[in-house]
Amino acid sequence: MAAVFDKPNLWQRIFPIFQGFDVPLAIAVLLLAGTGLVTMYSVGFDHGTRFVSHGRNMMLAAGVLFLVAQVPPQRLMALAVPMYTLGVALLLAVFFFGIEKKGAQRWLNVGLVIQPSELMKVAMPLMLAWWFQRREGQLKPLDFAVAGVLLAVPAALVLKQPDLGTTLLVLASGLAVIFFAGLSWRLIIPPVLIVAIGIGTLIAMETEWCAPNVDWHVLHEYQRQRVCTLLDPSQDPLGKGFHIIQGMIAIGSGGVWGKGFMQGTQTHLEFIPERTTDFIFAAFSEEFGLVGTLALMAGFIFLVVRGLIIAAEAPTLFARLLAGAMTLNIFVYAFVNMGMVSGILPVVGVPLPFISYGGTAMVTLGVGLGVLMSIAKSKRLMQS
Image (tube, rainbow, N blue to C red; front, side):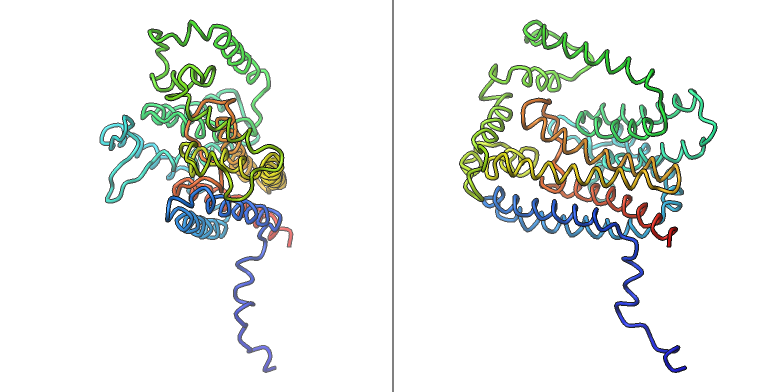
C-alpha cells in the first residue's frame, strides 16, 4: 500500500507536458535551427553579437513554441476573434499615430515599439479558420466573399504603410485557409491567368513600362523600382540592382560543393548587402554550394510535408485549416526569400525561416510551429 502514496519523481511530473509532441516535426525544427546557428556564426562573424543574439532569439522562439503547444486547438479558436479585432485596431492606430522610419509608417509606441502587422500573420489564419468552422456543412459563395473581406481589410492597411513583404505574407496565410476550405478551382484559375498574362505583358514591354517617367499608380515608386530591377538589374548595377547582382554572383561562385565554412569571399569581403538578414541565403549558398543548398531545401520540404500531414490528420475543420495555413506560411517565407535572392522574385524583405537574423520574425515562426505542435498533440492525445 505504501507505493500508492509515493510521490512521482521529476520525470513523471514533466513527461505529460511533452507527451504527444510530434517527433518528426521537432527533429526538422532542430536541424534547421542548427543550420541557422552555424550559418549565422559565419556570416555574422564580423558583426560581433549577431550570433549570440540569433541564439537568444531562437531560445525565445523555442519558449513561445513550447507555451503555444500547451494550448489546445479549442482554446486557440476562442482567441481568434479577439486577436483579429486587436490586430485591425492596432493597424488603424498605426495609420493615424504610427512611427515613421525611412519613409514607412509601420510601428506603434505603446510603452515599447511594436509592429502590429506581425500579429496579423497569426491572427489572420486564426480568424478565417474560425469563420469556416462556424459555417461548416453549409458553405455558400457568400461565405467565401465574407472571408475575402476579412482578409482584404488588414491586407490593405498593411499595404498602405507601405509594407509589400508583410502584405504578401498576410495574404498568403489568409488565401491558404480559403483554399483549404474548398474554394472552387473555377474561381481560382481566372485571377491566376490574369496575373500570368500581366507578368508576361510586363516582361515583353519592360523598356516602356520601366521608363523613368512612367507612373504605375497602384504601386509606390520604390515598389515599381523593385519590379523593374528584377527584370533587368544591370540597368543600375551600383544602385537598385546591386543586391540582386551580388546575390547571384555569390550563389554561382559557390559551385557544387561551396567554398567552405567561413571561406565565402563575397560574404566576408562585404559584397553581399544585408548578409545576416534578407540575403543570408546567398552567403549560405556561397559557402556550402549546390549540395548544401539542396540539403537546406530538403529540410524545408520535409518540414512542410510534415505540417501538411498534421493538417490532414487534424480532428476538426478549424485545426485542419489552421495547420495548413501555418505550414504554407513557412513555405511562402522560404520560397519568397530564396526566390528574391536568386533573382526570380522582387526583393520584398522576407526573412529565411530559422536562418535570417530577426527577433520578431523568429517569435512569429515559433507561434506558428507551436500551433502545429498543439494540433498534433490534440490528435495523439485523442487517440490515446
